[in-house]
Length: 204
Image (cartoon, rainbow, N blue to C red):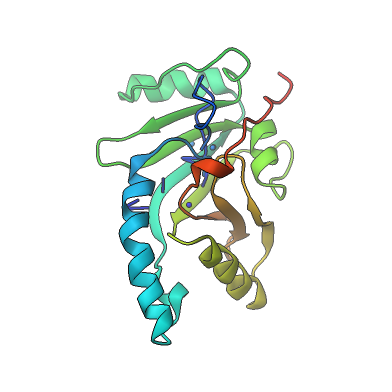
């Protein structure tokens, strides 16, 4: 959801990819692609977390969430891209069919910014309200189980669940909870390429 990130939507890259590779998504968080930042730390952290679990330490307390992504859910994709390109961001075009629904930028320091349409946001966050724009603040963890543990911890404390943990199409475990002001907070694990699938673009 990093520094591995990567809500999440990033959530994803709908450009052509090999059969074994694909997605990560909204400016999400997501959504999720072939990102070596999420693969390298996973290898070393798995050993650390396994040892901490063996000696009885809480795994999720050690698998600390890292802020490394923001998904911006937009009303008008063309207008948003014009603004952020004038600001200086290099935003590539995607396959036809996705031009109105998703764009992704990775900054020089590895931070992911994803721009998603409202219709696409509702595919990866069932709690996203129709007709609304805004941001999803994305946090990355290493383990898939940590997503479920943090979601349970937050919702048990009374915070609103927007999207229950699920295996997202970009290969990560993903969930969304609202903070006290109603901001959407995405929690995303490292992506597993073997769990990726290609989503269908929303109707334009």
